[in-house]
Length: 190
Image (cartoon, rainbow, N blue to C red; front, side):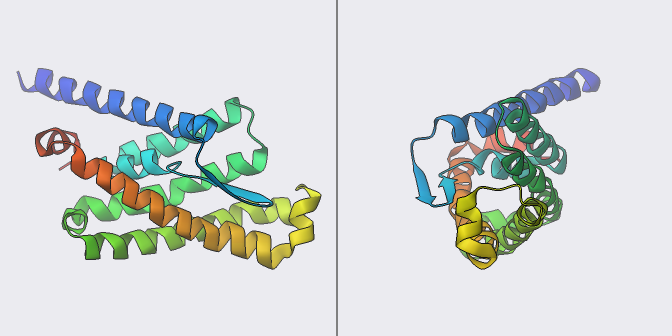
């Protein structure tokens, strides 16, 4: 009887992870709310699915980060965007591993926001690293080079990602808290 119960939970987790992947791919494609600071743009809520996956488990976070990366590649996004999506694996995995043993952080806003800031710094740094080979390889638009390394790579990609990540984390936490506790408890790896 225990195996049947575990398989139901695993199917539920796999379904949730697949839905989060779909949401994570769909939001950047259809979301009308974008902040455009040429040569960059930031789509509101584009990281929410990854953050929600991070709240569930390391496996779910890894699956959703990989799935959204594959989705962006298949959808034909520019390779620099795919590389930035691939960099999400790092912050999603590190954040979910930490949360696995520190769930109380999500229960109060001060702890959650401090955690979000640290994760957002990792997120921003990993996106800088993902963009640098394209920048120095001469593979980006003239607008990027006209803005310069400091503005595009460090400013828009780094600092912009930190701010964007913080906003999306807050949105994800609001979504997570709106889900009934009984449902979230059945998703979390103990």
